[in-house]
Every structure is written in structure tokens, then in C-alpha cells.
Length: 196
Image (cartoon, rainbow, N blue to C red; front, side, top):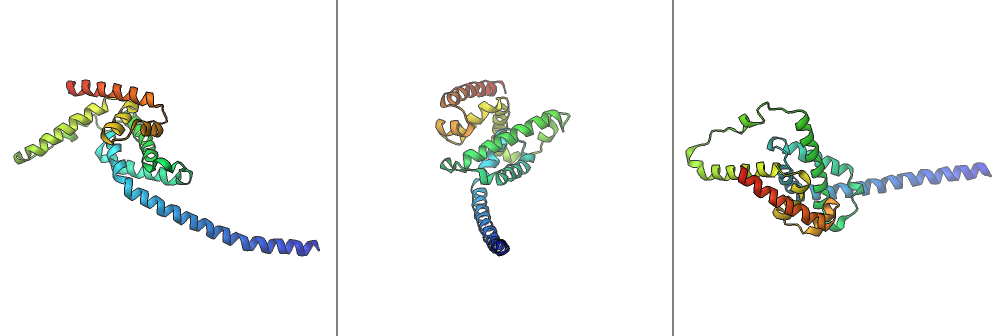
């Protein structure tokens, strides 16, 4: 009697396993579709914020890929969809940018600090583009002088237009901390722009 019970149990288990794996594959394909949609909608957001967080233009593409590899790996754990994916992706981008910054400090590539790479020949009729490029470079240098935690608040509030409550949620800090960092970052940015 126990032998037939064991055989029946084995048959039940063998019939259940394919159904579970099919459901898992279906769930995985739904997750992949959701993730692909997030990538297509938010890749530009991540790119521009990696740049603003101090990632050099030459490395932005690689760091974008790194952000989305991490996001894909952790996608099943992404539960707070009430704020949308931007807050979650910005958190990942912030960590990737901080890691890249630490790596560049420990392993500098350009002995001159990149000054030679910044020199370019520009045709005389492109003075408007040159002026805009110089202003953006000046802003980038000023932003780079602000500590990353303050810079993140400044970028999210002033450039991305997020509310203080959303920023507090994204960065995991209080709203008062957001306002303090924002005020401090604005002051430091103003000083840095005057210096440059």
C-alpha cells in the first residue's frame, strides 16, 4: 500500500513541476517586458543624471549599462512602484556614479586631469555653440565641486523638477534634510560659479 502511495506521490510531483516552471517562465517573461519598457522610457533620464553626477561623457554609456544590469538583477525586488521607476533608478545611478568617482580618484587616467582632452578646434562660425558649450562646461565644473549628496538633491529638485517629498523618498532622508542640502548646494553652486 505504501508503495502505491509513493508512486502516486511521484506522479503528482512530476506533473506539478512543469506547471510551476511554465508559470515561472511566464512570470519571468512578463518581468522582462516590464523591464524593457522601463529601460526604453528611462534610459535618457539615467544618462543625463549620470553625467550630472560627475560621470565623464566617455564613460556614460558604460555606466548606463551598469545601472541597468544592476536594475535587472534587482528587478524582482523592486516593490515600491508607487513612486515609479525614476526614484529607484536614480538611487542606483547615484551609487554607480559614486563608485566611478572613487575609482577615478584611485586610478587617474589622465596625468593632466583631462585638460588635453578638453582642447578642441572649433570653426569660427560656431561661436554660439561654443558659448553654450563653455557655459555647460562651467556648470559641470561647478556641480563637480559640490559633494555628491548635495548635488543629487540639487539635480533632482532644480533640473528634474521633483518635489522635496519625492526626493526624500528617493534618497531615504527626511524632507528637512532635503531642504537643508538644497539650500547648501545652491549656496555652494553660486560660490563655485563665481570662482570659475
